[in-house]
Image (cartoon, rainbow, N blue to C red; front, side):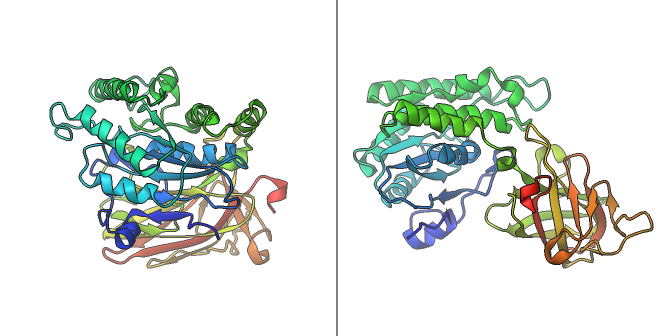
Length: 414
């Protein structure tokens, strides 16, 4: 029987009693950079395979699925994506509840990017708290190989990216202290900091996160460190690396919805499908004036639903675009768009102007007649060519957006 793919920390608080009701992070820069703080269990197709637990912060959201794909047929990979630090109250019980659900062969863990702020560690507390965390992991995962991962660099927000002069020195110091603890306790260290400090050009521009090529680098390092405890042969390790190197472009494909305020309108992301990411990016200006919603797509149609809550009434532009992160630009196909809580016109693109463009839409994308679901029209959008429509939102009235999307520029995706 398969594990639940993703279990929220709030749900675990009800089932297990050890988690806070909602995992929170007050600093908007330290967002999950993915579906959220959660336990993400592997789909158990072969229970005889060794099991790996990846414990990490938002950086783990970037590499965990790449590690999973690389180790397919060799290991089942779980992940605990969390916003805690070693001195966080209740951490011991959370570690017990996370690790006691399965028998792990390897626990690869990091806690760093949420523990650099003043007052989070008392003087002299960092090393003892880190040692205690190692002891707790060993106690709750007896027989597992434990591997510590150093925290990644903190960068500036503008190009050319450099190292943040205020936060990064703290990360360096904490990495050094953690490495000393690991040396004394016989725990191998994955130095992810050194791995990326020479690739600052791959930074995402929000200080803490990275673009996709950086996560490939991290995944390779992590897979390499797991090879010995998983008893991978040289041929198996080479095959794992090949899965990373030869990843098809479509693996990274995303839809992207940009909702931008005109004037005073404000909003916040409320809910959505489990693998969606809805956020206010720090680079977008006044909080609430911009909402970015992203999620993965494949070669098959998927239905997507998300809801945002207007906090100040006004007009916003809702734009459907693609994502230009992959090396080869991909087009995202959209059809069957509907909105509840606001008025959106011509969501099936059936009404066209004399030039063949969809009415009510400011469109720079491509219309394809009869290729949507049920033979209706679709529009394809890229990172530079999307389509948008202005809608009016009312404070306190939730707006739910539903649509279908898939990769648009691969023949086998039809």
